[in-house]
Image (tube, rainbow, N blue to C red; front, side, top):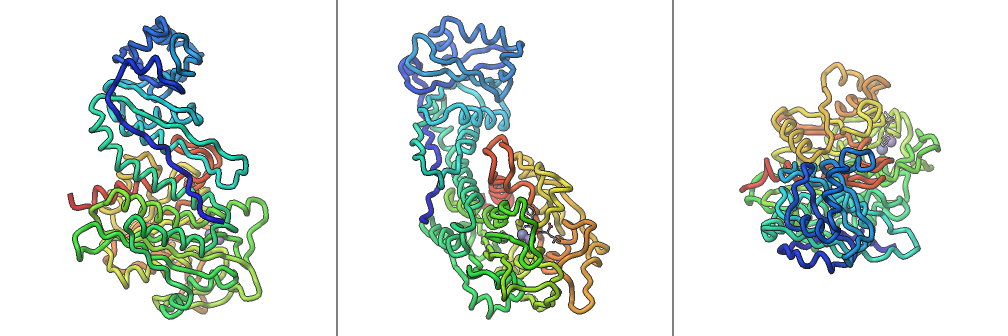
Length: 497
Ligand code: BES
Ligand code: MN
Ligand code: ZN
């Protein structure tokens, strides 16, 4: 089946033309400050609707208008004297925060359906952020629905300083497009998104200026990636490592390395998972999905930074030649690993890709992302990813980026006593550390493959990559968590200005 990317809503910015409001078809959106202050567009709507907005302000305290608070909206259906089907009244103070602006954009995306929308707002803060919220929330994974999804109408934003707003929106739309790419990968079922299909979709990103290498099993074997290869050996889909290069920074500067776990399906292998809920393991390539989406965003906005994205693509299946509990494998680093549980496969994939990334690129920093442990969901739920790091500066910079983007992230501890849980009787280490602190022992395992002097962050995204209820910027399913935060980290810490 060919890849059919979920299209992004195209949003254009133009000068305010008050007279267009009465004749615009589809939906018209305007802003009303919680204190009742109206801009020129709101005043015109108030006049056309014979004072509906004034009445709304008076009713704002009543429970029918509970959505009329910053970032929320109330709609007026089939308004008289207008061609539009509805007027969406967004509640935003003139000095809205970025979060309120994004929330308002998301609220507009939710009411819009497929209708054309004309948004007319005088001069509120963060019009570009409102557009970003709208674009991010206007997502639905319809690739496998046979009833043809109707084409989406256009979204026009009229505002003062519309050229500035359009310029500010361009890099944000690159981030949204990256997040869409991530979500499509994560939502895709495993019979479609095989390791080969995944690699092909990444290779296609050469069109937007990335250099993409695909390493096959033969190459991985000569690199001696025994840990990664043992995970995929029971599957008919060949294991692959894909390396995506973005060299927008100073030539010769050490890159930031992003490493992603790409288990296209995790049955657990011979240590088979229980049947209930196993279908969720199509999202076990979430780390690789986020790395791919970040690389896409960086290329689209032509980031002035050197970043290399590496993903380990494998499928964890039981079969006659699958790896067994008790097997000992040798990693690229040379350390031997006793595979106690074949369901602790993500760390086996990552340790070889991380080692390869450091040997080849001597990165200025390395961040790995993985849907690594169920234990991180027990600890942090679906609100925060687990953050583990050996470097306070890099870690604090990331936590700040995540906070700015409203992507939950919470630092977790590391320590020698946890590492001791990985001692093996017959090999250098075993791949599980027992029940206590499952997410931390997984991180300790990875830390053994981080060289001294490499600033490193491990992000356990098992709880945040795909969720069962809507979030502010995404419908249920894949969230795209991390694309915006990592993009911001690159912009703030790794980009030459
Ligand atoms: N892919 C899973 C972790 C996971 C669980 C991701 C739930 C998303 C939702 C991982 O490979 C796994 O199976 N981890 C085991 C580790 C254990 C065997 C030490 C787990 O968490 O149970
Ligand atoms: Mn597993
Ligand atoms: Zn897994």
